[in-house]
Image (cartoon, rainbow over all chains, first blue to last red; front, top):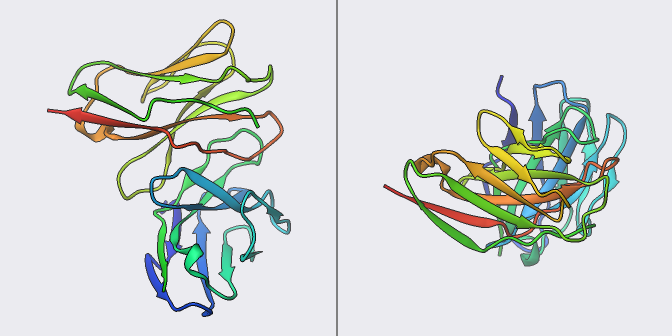
Length: 113
Length: 110
């Protein structure tokens, strides 16, 4: 099993450009999550999907949209990138949304200039 | 969400035990205590979790104080690979949200 995979690994955007971060998991998990991690900080939850067909806002959702394409895939879109969105983005999944361990992907390092 | 307090950093020598403390004085009766760690340039990985009783798994042990206001993650024999940031997280019974703090950076010396 590959676990949680994310693409791309690195990305540089200009202010105002848009992009979609892709995440897929092969563990048949129901729940998926997007976090961001700024330098020297812990992770902050952006959006999550408790199950296929549902999405909810996390702690820092402004400037982002998500799509739960199917059970395997959960994408994060930046419609108009801003320098404040420079961060490392992690996708995670868990078997269920209540008190199961989360498995994290390797991250996408995004720089917005 | 109840908060946790951890030391910013700790050091250990290889093959010695490491005790990583976490204070959570505002924990509610139904909050679980989770520990994750993040190795350099990687995503976090689950270590262990518990509610009231001490817990053991292949990676570590979790000792929970009787009043649940603090807990300690125990690595029985530190290796160089254990150098990471360790996060202590409280999680309610009906929530999937993990609220990360800044964690404890563990350095392991050969």
